[in-house]
Amino acid sequence: MIFLLTLMILAIACGVPYKGMEKNYEQRDHINTPDYSDLHYWAAHPFKKDPADSVPKPLLSTFQPDSSVDVFFIHPTTYTDDQLPFGYSAPINNIELNTKTDYTTILFQASIFNEVGRVFAPRYRQANLQAYFPKNATDSSAAIAAFELAYADVKTAFEYFLKHYHAGKPIVIAAHSQGTTHGKRLLKEYFDNQVLKNKLVAAYLIGLPVTENEYIQLKACTSPNQTGCIISWRTYRDGYTPPLILQEKFKAIVTNPLTWTNDLTMAERKINKGGVLLKFNKIVPAVAAAKVEGNVLWTPKPKFFGNIFYTTNNYHVADLNLYYLNIRENVANRVKNYFNK
Image: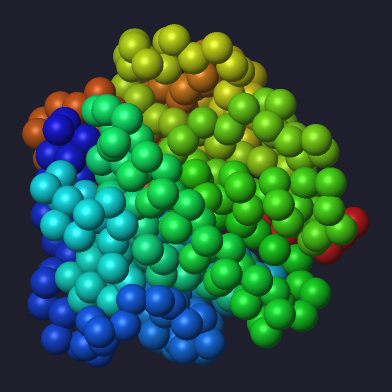
């Protein structure tokens, strides 16, 4: 409930009037199977104008987009209604959900990567947020089926991307939350111990745990320019780690998004070049520090106007937003180093 309330507050604070954008979406409710040859089924695609193309105004004067790399972005859960109006799986053509997806996560997260390459982000029949919290065996079965359906869509989209758009370019995989659930499987199936591994610039799998021994060949990134590796973190207020995470029996990959190492030193907020939190066109410098602590990332309470109302200890919804400019710079550095090799 705290997570959902935070999500609602953040969406309102961002001033994103996605409700007003619904009129621009084509009605296709009678179809519930994605066809990735149709741009309609991509939340972001280089052959259409979409929110992933957006650039915060302070960055426009230096914006120099490149197309030598492809970014495959898997969005997090936006089907959060705990009443499960569509069951455990979201319909692919629900205009309200698609608008919400496009003007929250695609705008505020996928846009981070739009300078280094072409951004592809498929729509998929995402599992409802409650699939992560089954209450009984029936719920568990329904949740598993929902995650399988969602991954089947992501996999189909990725295969279509490889066949029709990829053309041998280097690839950045980026995902958050439920997107990371599916991104982890995608890496296992197509990159780990596979030829495509040589095309991987890096995988930014944020918001859910990736274990250090998850893969045969793919390992955690431990330096700012390293390529072919995995970056991951989950953000909480310093001093707080959820009880469920404290019970984890594995060691998770935790990358400090200010130093891009996994050492335990606190990176002060002054080296945070800026987050994009409340308004897309406003950069908030020095908004958050970062410190690897166990299986999570800690920061003192973020500093931004209105943070007095930001009382949660769980910064999941802002995992990427808090470090927007540093991530943007880091992926550019990794791409440059990939080509230098």
